[in-house]
Length: 280
Length: 270
Image 1: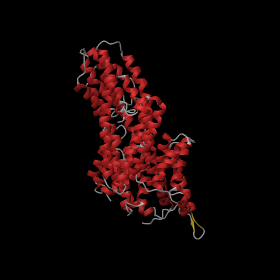
Image 2: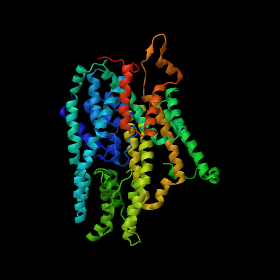
Image 3: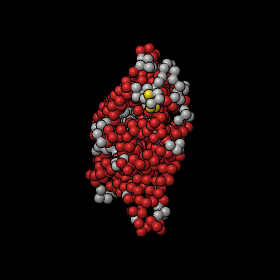
Image 4: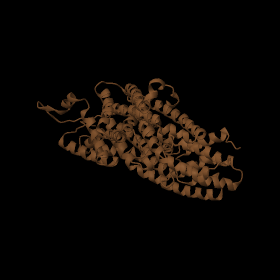
């Protein structure tokens, strides 16, 4: 499967919008277009295979379900995961003739997405470094009292950083990468150790994403019980994710009421329901 | 008596909503986003160029927090700037003290509540809806997330502007803490379900007639190996303080060794 220049340009544009200091803004750029689940839909539409795109995006999403970037340190770059990793994974899956709905296709996508995402951090630091130039211009504008220029510095000039660090790399890598699949097929047989390892790594990687999230919420062994409650619901009882969210919501309400009893025992019995304005 | 117009406040909010991180650098993370969002406020409140220059100088100080929950701080400073322009005893230093004091705590709350809980819950539901390749989950996430954030941030901005410091108490008080704990509980459960539905670690280790390891595991607890892998990764990161990237590399080594020993085998061919 080949990615043509128009498709590559569209992917490059999405990469500019979606990265962590991205030009789509934090909410719509980074946290919407940059999420692999959403990117799966977008890339799928660009490449003309929505279904495979979404399956690949969803598989990679599990690894990056809680991509927190405290203080601007990143361990993976969303634009690389979403707009380089997903297109390459789609090409690889199609080129190898895997069934997109199979576990193997998901493992492939996960391994490829994580590798590209980790290498992609260089794009993040690149963009942030080029932005220093515009910020320098910004300080001069503030000194001179030329305030209008601040908008140009904050929202206009970073396009140049993204042209260099998001657009061009995405276009080149997606176009070149799509022809790499045939080479892989020639030199790396599926029953060889390299490919077996690749697929196995892919099956193990989603555990890292979940563990990153658990690191934040599990402090003692007992906290694992909440996690395993949800795990057991799905693994043993076949509850789907929406069902699990509803059950979780029910226990959260109980937990909230118990906590509020501790906070103000005297009031809880009579007036626990009169402060709805915060329950947004 | 100077009063900021609704139009100016909206402009300031939209500037922040869009531009809080567009010109990010490691040195001045959200500083320029902040400057842009305070610009309409300063231009409306002060008449002479010198006054404007003075006022904007306050916001050249470093700023970085979780930008979505941090909207409340931007709203607060708009209110403070208005009070300052009306001659109340507030100066740039006071404003910066408040900004600097709120950055850290709000980043902590925002990272754990929004990025670490709300997004995983929404994505978890989205994954459930999109598992078979349907666009429904992605569309669900796009709509719900953006609506929640746009209106939530707008609400936070105007609450911050109207209530000042009291608005922050809404986020850090005991009741807010109880609410936060409960929401995190939903998140943890959904993540458990995500793990069980989406992680599939299986072993190929099998001596015919003696032991079929996978079916033995299955009879103990379904997805036992998947759960074990999660706990192992958590242990590496929390107890051994290993970075996620290193954990991924360790998994590569484990996968390689496992394949050599015949413990793992995807069993595929072209």
